[in-house]
Image (cartoon, rainbow, N blue to C red; front, side, top):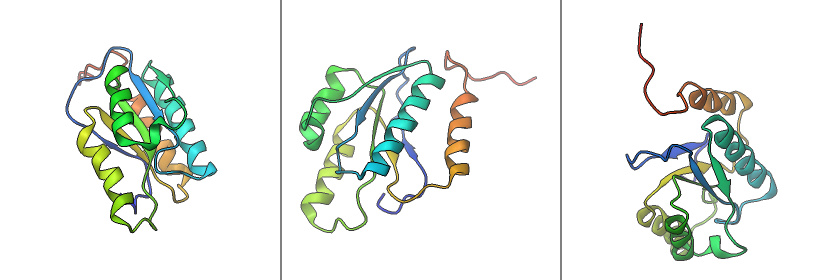
Length: 142
């Protein structure tokens, strides 16, 4: 996960609500300002293109995996959006915080890379969401 160069959506196989519920963990993994901007940009695009809504966690709650998991459950979140861990995170405490969150949450997770992202990758990511109808039924082939 520390080496991701494009947004990654990890899914758990559960259907989303008819109006997609997105939770933004903009401070989890302590992202820089560029990464935070990408988190908000992708979250807004996802919300618009999947006809959903989003909310931000309260201040500092997103630093603690247990608090963030509680917020995910209370909000009945479909997708949690957060930054990938830093490549320089080498301590077991920093790595285990991310792993603990991924192993505990029950929703899908959109992981936004910290490294510069090629704009064509972001455009293709966006197109993938546009290809799905709003009611989440697969398109019928002709």
